[in-house]
Length: 359
Ligand code: TXA
Ligand code: MG
Image (tube, rainbow, N blue to C red):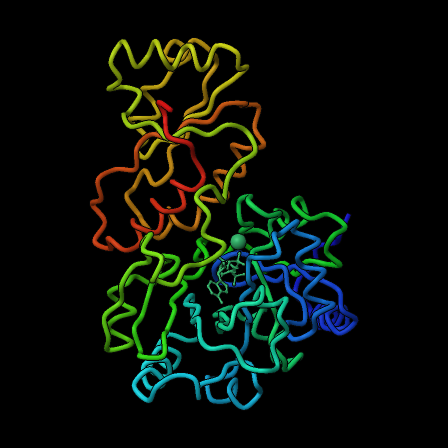
């Protein structure tokens, strides 16, 4: 098993030494824990793909504490391939949103190995807003590649122990930064040579906020083959290991036909767990509902979107490790959030974690 370390000076020094040797570490960021390695070193980066069983077509994000112009000088990005307006847009985004949970996809510079970007001519970069990530980055003084520290296709870890549980000996050590304060992965925005912005992955930084920082409109990635896409945004992702269905109705409002269908679904299972969005809805679920023992969990009983985002993955991970061998989610409530963008990111992650029911 790997070891989890409080972020003492000695532990940071060990983490830096491990990275310089080419090993992988578990690194807390404000979004989720990353599986970090020297991002400009192809052999180190290859270990990330192996440890995660990550498909070679899925590019990695580089983490840095530098601004865009320094990254350009280091050959990490190539701002000369952006038109003047796009360059200004990219600079505004970096200056106004970093450090923070926003990844910019920009023309890739010559220092970045093919493996880091899965052969793409763009590279994702971000400056994480987390004191431990920044201490390590400042000590290393080179970009670190860091995908979320889960095995490919599984739930991103938001605690150090979750990283150790996911990756075991595949990671040299894990620095413990407590629970990640954001809890969802960064928003990913592609900046094209004309300065057009495409949101490839929604995050807690909403399209409106990004547009305001950039002083330019942001479009959301579509199925249109012309718009850039994130190779990692495959439909099913962030998923528990046991079957997890998204219901189109609350259990307490299901018709008799719906309940019959669900009982047939549940019959071969030992125990079900239902993710609800209000305590009262969870309280309404009993063993009689599905005909097998059923736990109901409410997250966000107080209507706090930030806490919901922070706790979502930990809740999914707990449900996945519970006795339940069947998971159901009630429909995400029509948003009452002031922040519609965050609800959009939460719905996106839930959709990727679940299979629609009925099929
Ligand atoms: O919050 C985060 O971004 C976390 C923490 C650790 O920083 N990292 C993270 O990395 O979520 P990962 O690898 O799990 O997700 C990165 C996403 C993937 O969907 C990948 O396909 C996309 O970003 N991506 C990376 N580089 C890209 C590029 N050049 N073009 C398009 N999409 C890219
Ligand atoms: Mg990931």
